[in-house]
Length: 191
Image 1 (tube, rainbow, N blue to C red):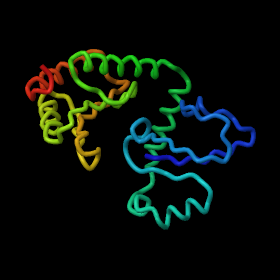
Image 2: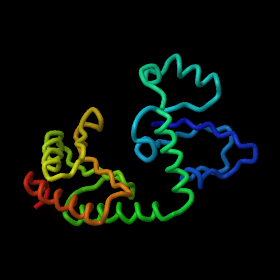
Image 3: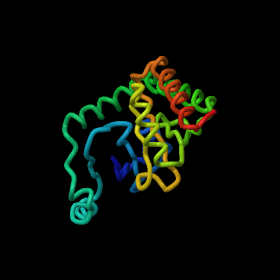
Image 4: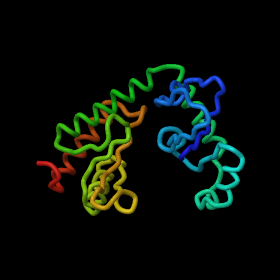
């Protein structure tokens, strides 16, 4: 979900703690916050902004015309997730640790992992067929990952997306890495 957020704080409040992004001293500015994978992960979206902008989007935005509003349970879950994250740093620290465990082990095994410290970890393969075959083989090993290729990603940038979750244990992560190593060797991606 893409959230176009219109910030209009008369006292120029610092909203960084709320969204954990570097937006400071903002008044009357538009910012995009992508929370589709981090918060709702299920369906829909919403628009917040000046009435003329909302009306324009309602009339002209194809995604708006052909989609539905967020279901109330999804909004409730996203709200609760933000509340939990703001109440304690334990979940965020755990996610960082789990993400780095996966990224480090995969890199040490010879895989190229895109991005930085984000829990969505793209295993870069380049070839669309290879990404699809490896994702299928991973599923046979009990690991559900998704192969992405053009037009979802640029040509020649096919990948398998792995999404680390707070529910994953170290054992889950280690099993996933071992499955990638076996599958990667089978397909000649790593030695």
